[in-house]
Amino acid sequence: MNKNETQIRVRYGETDQMGVVYHANYASYFEVGRTEWLRQYGITYKSMEENGIMLPVISLNIKYKNSARYDDLLTLKTSLKKMPMASIEFDYELLNDKSELLATGHTVLVFIDMEKNRPTRCPKYLLDKIEG
Image (cartoon, rainbow, N blue to C red; front, side, top):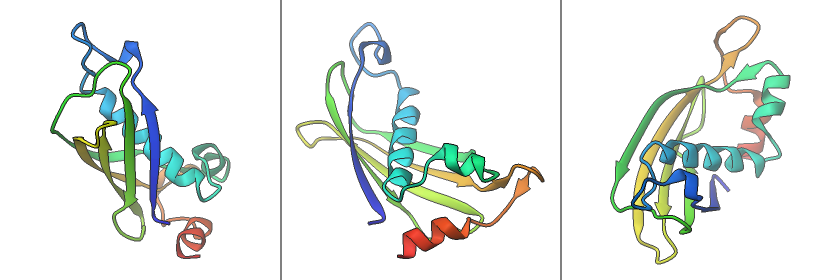
């Protein structure tokens, strides 16, 4: 269960004049993937923040293969790269409705103790859910 698939419909405002998705929007799509990956474990960014943990992105890598276009129905595959410690890493594959690979990506996020404003270890409740 360390993988998640989410569908995203490309909105008009995410495209340029040619109807092609603007490159920076892929980072937002990956955020949707992470959010839904966490949600499948019953965890949200909001609940983590309420428990004193922030999860900022410290590294983002995107490789573009093909263009996503207005009104395409995309499938985003999000997978956990390895068990989290003080950071958590995700890999992504973005495909169109013809199963053509549009982009791949990788992010690293760090767990931050909001009170101390310092990195901290992955919360036990998240580890328990991942391992469970």
